[in-house]
Amino acid sequence: MFLRNQWYCAALSHEVKAEPLGRIFLNEPVVMYRRVDGGLVALEDRCCHRRAPLSKGKVEGDRLRCGYHGFLYDASGSVVWVPGQDKVPPDARVRSYPVCEKNGFVWIWMGAKSLADPAKAPAFTWNDDPAWASWTDYLPIKANYLYVVDNLMDLSHVPFLHIKTIGSADDTEPTLKWERGPDWSRGTRAAYNLAPPLRWKMEGINHNIDQMKVMTFTPPANVLIDILTTDSGRKPGQTPLLEQRLIVLDSMTPETETSCHYFFGNCRNYKIDSMELTAMLHEQTVIAFNEDKDMLEAEQRIIDLDPTASQIDVMGDTGGLQSRRIVDRLLAEESGTRAAAE
Amino acid sequence: MYLRNHWYCAATSAELGPEKIARTFLDQPVLLGRGMDGKPEALEHRRRPVRSYPVCERHGFVWIWMGDPARANAARLPDFHWNDDPEWDSVCDRLPIAADYFLLVDNLMDLSHVSFLHANTIGSPDDRSPELSWDRGPDWVRGTRIMRNCRPTPRMQKEGIDFNIDRVQLMTYTPPANVVIDLVTTEAGRLPGAAGPHNEHIVILDSMTPETARSCHYFWASARNYRRNDPEFSEFIRRMTILAFNEDKDMLEAEQKIIDLDPSAPQIDVAGDAGGLQSRRVFARLLAEENARQAAE
Image (cartoon, rainbow over all chains, first blue to last red; front, side, top):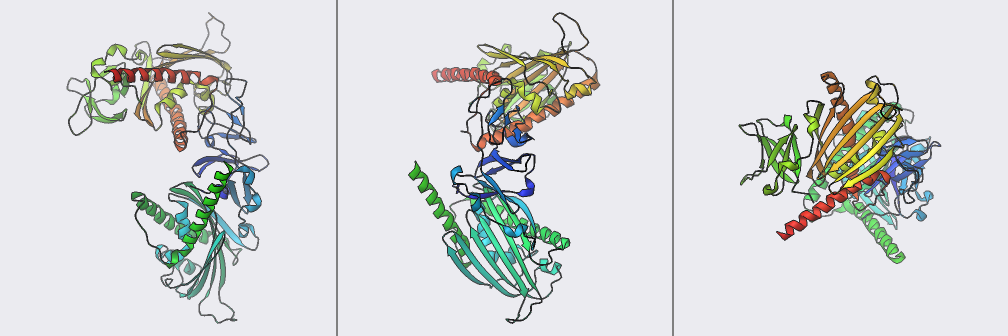
């Protein structure tokens, strides 16, 4: 079961071009492309004729032609040409999905069209703010999307899973605080006097650091992590040697129950003109997130072996559990609304 | 559900030697090989006990009978004689496809896909409004498709053909899943009874054997009666056909994946689908008959 009346991340802006891009969201095949004016189109990726994926076809101006028998679709998903006959059957069409584009991310609405309000799509403003330097990337993960939420809301995994990249071995006794609103959940995690992780050493930072991480979940599956890194032991009012703010943008979209699309960005407000630093951060983060991918996919396989096997929760799981409670509540509300409407 | 009391293509003759080949037909594991006398053999591929299946070799293909052995009758083998007829030169091969074999029947009975899917190999960009007619008998379906004044296909351009063509395609389905396509190509605009410079007659023999409900063995041959005794040209035809049929494989496997995502998703039919739909109707009738017979026994 997935939440439907939500904006889900569908792509990074630069991924969608005047050629078809096929992805599965919430078990539904979707094809995306750009019209001549640069506007986005998202259609059901299943030809209404023989169910071939339209993403194997070609964009012709504002239209999309199926690569199998040449059925030609307009940007609204209606067929305008079929082979071998003059008349197009009246029911020859595929579903179209509302899409919008904000701050370098493309968002899709998989629910009731009348409820789609682009103003409610997440605004990852840091990603195209000139005061910040950023990059974005994408990883497909063969695991349920909420495992990625668990992972991002419980950063106690960082000193273990990411010890070769972004983790510090000292980071095992943070102070942790949790807050929640009706539609969000936030954790604040402060760690002091940590030996710099390898990635910071690569930036030339060899002294110990303090780190404050604020992890904010919003449904359906966005996690924003605001990381402030300073030199450790600084007294209040003292000028820091180091003050780095890094915002990690994460948005997970279910592909199936056991696989998801992981879109992420990384924005910083220091050394924003250093292309070298951008390249290094990009490379090291992708290495670290592949460590997550590897672990989450292994976790999914073990869960699939026996989905009834029990698990225990500890303090650090609070954020993930609260986030799951929000999704569950919204799911119940959605099915309640549907039941009332029917 | 499969038809059982039919001959299914199991291998090309060239594939079978003294080494055994393990292959699955209709969800059954089978071990294929040749005996001391060179005759093909097929055994159920289990630890024990094993049963043997009737097999028959004809015209360069080995056929297996997956039903009641008492009913196996070589007279019912499909006519694929073009593959070893001394008047014809033929190339043949097998392609495994991870898709329902009937998606391939649909594909072969609706050649409107050729202009799009095979635009880089065997399709003409002008093949968009052919004349189509359909015939059917109790156990066969035939489509006649006439293309006129079309630019030559990339394959023909590679042969140096730079004039427009006319082409007649006859697609004949016989159960369980054989499709023979007869292709006659001439220079465009030839009048009835007139002679002309370009005379291509190609017969494509296709036989699809289900491996599982979602995968099949695609056996094919391409026989021709022009540019004979030209091994280089045979090799060219073989390579181009493999290229084109891999375009089908790629699309059919993608189609199967989309169908599996939601098998209940509807689809619409157009005029070009008549042959595939009629073939499915022949198949469904025979399946009902076979099931009724089995229930009676």
